[in-house]
Amino acid sequence: MSEGFEDLTGGIAEDYELSEAPPDLFKIIQKALGLGSLLGCAIDKNKELKESLNLWTEHAYSVTGAEEVYCLCRTVQLVRLRNPWGETEWTGAWSDNSSEWNNVRPEQKVKLNCSAEDGEFWMAYSDFVQNFSRLEICNLTPDSLTSDKVRHWNCYQFDGNWRVGSTAGGCRNNRATFCSNPQFVIKLEDVDDDPHDGKDGCTLLVGLMQKDVRKDQRFGRELKSIGFDIYKVPDEYKGCSNVHLGSDVLLENEPVVGSSFSNLREISRRFKLPPGEYVIIPSTYVPNLQRSFILRVFSEKKAAASPMDVNITAKIQKDRISDSDVDPSCKQLFMQFAGNDSELSAKELQQMLNKFVSERTDIKSDGFSRETCRHIINLLDKDGSGKLGLVEFHTLWMKIQEYLEIFKNCDTDKSGTMSSYEMRDALKDAGFQVNGEVLQVIISRYANKQQAIDFDNFVSCLINLEMRFKMFHLFDKNTGKIELDIQQWLCLTLN
Image 1 (cartoon, rainbow, N blue to C red):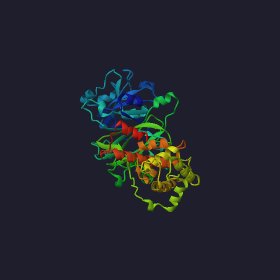
Image 2: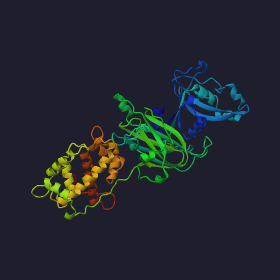
Image 3: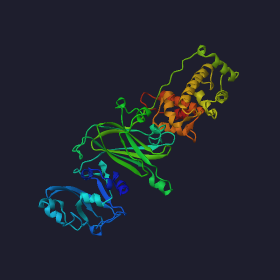
Image 4: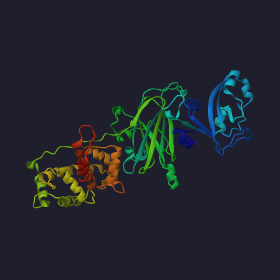
């Protein structure tokens, strides 16, 4: 039922096993009906039922009402169900024309319209929980409702991706990669009106759906096990959207609430949280599983919700050195490979760099490509000669030494390569801050099939990033955007 509900309405469905019904479920039903939600229930096939009660297993009933009546000096909770066949109604207590209705005030009896052969019937909530197996509630988005007589949820929706090597970090059990998952922040300020459980708080309904499920099923691919955790945002990060929370927050603190992990199309949970800022971390249970997802958040009161990720920035130091600043050992290395023109061509630079990495046992490299060396020259060539002079080579050599230290620090297992999940921190150490979308592109370009990055690819990535930042700032007129004519575009892209 829940998938049918969602496909028809675009709402979020939540499931309740009635054998484990929460104590306030009747109030939840009443509130859901007041919000225009669709409610359905069913009885599992292995449930034993009395034939005389006229209930069917494996059959979808709709829940259309929930009321309290005063009967024999006590309040009785009733739910109204409808058999979509339009016949075959419940014959137990509070059914049509049952004796229980004789003890209800006439005006209330008329109001509830308790007698009609239309497939709709009342039953005690206690009988409902005892006889039915599960209840499914589909909470509707505001645009699904045209009536002003019902209250509306506030709805927030985000599309996201888990990508192998960059944002598919898996659940919290995977401590080395968990923090790389996408993050979404929600700020709750106002508590609910008339809380059904008598406790102040902000009701939140979170639904996490994996995309392309039916297409995968046609090809025999299994659903991924998905879920989410919700953390309280620390005081020092409140109000900040330009941040991606790391292990110092997510691994040193327990989540406030979360869902279980299951291989369903959608996982949804209802929570009541104190006012504050929270970050939602959706993930697959196992890391390195590629999948697109939709995260939806319904709140009873208005909230502020947005993706939580860093802005794209770079701290690029200007190179200001002269011949006198060049280190003698650097000059000796330069003269060893420079040609008669005392400059390094792309081929000569390639020979020098590959000799350098081949002599080191603490890093792995497949060797610098000629293309990477051309990019290095394009970045550092100040006089337009297409080669590197001594001062330009010295600038490069200082960068290589800096990159080497960053690479070794991020190579935590001392394998000679760096895990792609550590790339975000490595880029930050090198002065570059990129968001998840850019990081995914970087990993797909520079990581190998084992999601590892060797030293030459790391250097190539940093050189390319610096070159592209400089190109952008060259054409940016302080608007954060650039406009190019065809000549400029070709000169940039063919460089």
